[in-house]
Length: 257
Image (cartoon, rainbow, N blue to C red):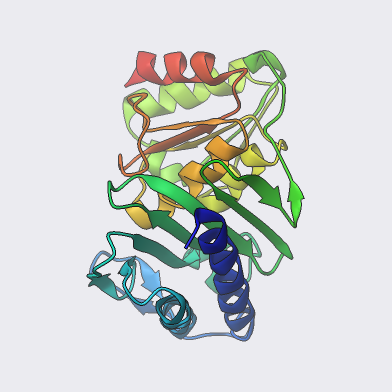
């Protein structure tokens, strides 16, 4: 099975799971608190079950890693990494900036494909290594902005920026960039991949937050690294940028890290 076929299957999977989440969106869904104090709902669990069942039916030898259901080993070497609702806090507050994420790792544990659906916005984006990146069915790419002074920079949850260094870094961003906003979750990375923002800073991520995003940003012509500047989808932090301001943003982050 080619990566393109896997990408197309992932697109179908996140679309179906996205439709499922909308059955609960803005309906007063009950919220539980997990051991790590993050929220979870029946929509998270049902969406993840749907994704695993859908993809397992197409690729029975593949493994899975999901935020809610944990690890399910496979035999093919490929592993799907799933976040059924990225942005559960937004979801439970009725904010439409949540997404369904599916990423694919190859037998070398390289992130090689990704699919994201933002069902409440009617947007989707998919990519696979060597196949390009597609937003709502059309090829997309990062912007050509080449200076931080002309850039739109977005960042993740504000509480992740509460150390002395990161507070100072955020101040510098506001002074240096054209526009800075806190948007959070996969939406910020999607803005970069579609040329609507130039950088997204995520100081704390899990693998299910980033494995889908990495190939999407790279296939759109962007740069995806952790905060140390390493090209990795599993570095527990994430920076997505276009090519034009990538070095400038990472130098600024390094100054305050």
